[in-house]
Image (cartoon, rainbow, N blue to C red; front, side, top):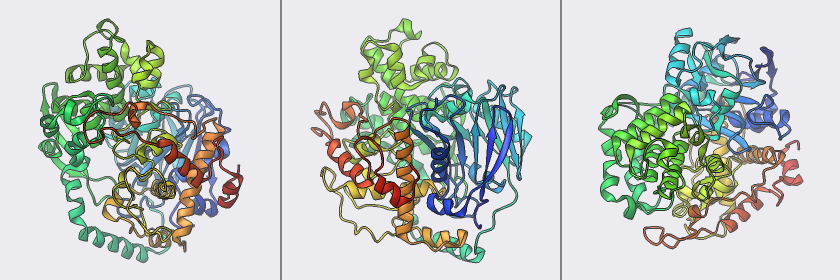
Length: 618
C-alpha cells in the first residue's frame, strides 16, 4: 500500500502492553484516514454505553492521508473518543506539526484503552514505542510539559494536557506547538482520566507515495493556483481570523452578552474598533503556518499587558468573541492574556469564555454572589475574567464548578441557572449566531458533535453559493437564500460530507477560501495512494463517515432529532434591535429536511438501506 503506513498502534494503559494492527486498503478507501478511520475503529470496538472517563473509552490520535506529503494545507490531525462533555461521538481537529511527525514515525494512528496506574507519556520514535514515567511533569502546565518532552526528543513533536486535563475538567483541551489546541469535546479530560500526560513522537522515514513525480507536479499546480488567488487570502495572512472580528461584533455574527445582547447596542462600534484585526496585528512579531501550510494565518505576538508581559499566539476570532463581545470586554490586555492563559494551561478557549459569560449573568441576576466567588465579577470586567480563568485552571473554588462548562455548572449551582447556560447537549456554543446564518442551527443541533461550528453545513454560505472542497458535478450551485427554510436539506448534507473529507485527509477547512470548489483531491489521491476515484465515490466516503458517526451516537442512546438548544440562539425571544431583529429560526424544518436527506430515522438510527448502500456494519 502506498501513501500510508497501513497500520495503527494499540496501547493498553492498564497493563502497559502494545499491539500493532494492519488496516486493509479497502478500509482506507472507504473511510480515508483522520476521524474517518477513527469512527470505523471506535464503532467496531465500542458498544456505546461506555463511561467516557472510564477504562473502556478508546482515545485515538489520527493522522491524515495528506500528512507528510507536502500537500498544501494538508497537515492537520484529529483526536477522537467518546465525549465526556456530551456523551456523543467526540472529535477535535488540530493544526501544528504533530500529525505529519506521527505518520513519519510509522503509524497512521495510535489508540489508547484502559487506565494507567501512574502518570505516563508515550514515546514513539521511528516505529519504536514505550510508556515512560510522567510523574515529573504531572501537575505542570502545557508549556512546561511540552518543554520537558522536547528535551526527551529535541526534534520531536509533543501532544500534552495541562492540569485541567489531569483533573478531568471538561474544559480541558489537548495542546501541541505551544498553543495549537484540539479543544472541543472535552477530550483533554479523557487523556487525564487515563493518566496519559502526553505523547512525544519523532519520525524520520517518510511514507512513499504511489507516484512521487505526479505528486510533485500536482502540489506545484496547487501552489500556482494559490498564487493566483493571493488577494483572497492576503487578509488572512495579515490578520488571521481576527480579520472578521470587528465586523462580526456588529453584524449579528458574534453572540453578545451571553447571547442576550445586540452588538451595535450593547457593545458598540467604538469597542468593536478597539479589538479589530488591525489593532490586534500591532502586537504581531511574525506570521507562521502549521505543517504544510502556505496560508500562514497564525501570528506570534508580544505584548506588555497590565497583567505582565506575554509572548505567544495571536488572538483568533473565536477568542475575541468569547473573551470580547460575549463578556462585553473590549480591553485587549485582558483578552490577549485570557487567550494566552488558556493556551498555557490547556483550556478550550471557546468554552472558557462561554462559562465565564454564564457566570457573569448568574452574578448579575443574584444567583452567584461575591461570597460564592471570592470577588465581584460582571460583564465588561476584564480583571475579573482573568481571575476566573486562574481559578478554573487550578480547579480552585468556583473554578472547580465552572471548569466543567456551563451545562454541568448549572446543575451544581441550581436556582434556575440552567436558563443562562448557552449549550447544546452539554457543549458550550461557539461564536457564530444562527439568527444571522440559520443553517448553523442545523449544524449545532444535529451533528454527531453537538454545538460545533466547524462540523460542516451551509450556514457560512447563506447569502451566497454552496462551497465544497472539490469540484462536484452532483450540484449546480444556486444562491442560498438566507431565510428560506425549505429546500436546503441536500445542500446541507453535501457541505457536511465535504467537511468529513477534509477532516479525514488532514486538510485545513480554510482551503475552501483559497480553492473554492476546486482543490484537486482526486489527483492528490491518485498521486499518493494510486487510487482512481470519482467525485461521486469521494462524496460517498464523506457520507459514509458522517453516517458512521450517527451510528456511534445511536449506540450511545443519542437521537439527533431530539437534541434541543437554548431559545436565545434561534431567536426565542426575538431580538428587538440590530441586524437580526425579529428573526426566529425555523430549525425544525431545516433539521427535518437534512436528517431525511442523510437517512436518519426518527429514533436516531441510520436506515438499513443507507447502512447497506454505504457498506457500514450495524
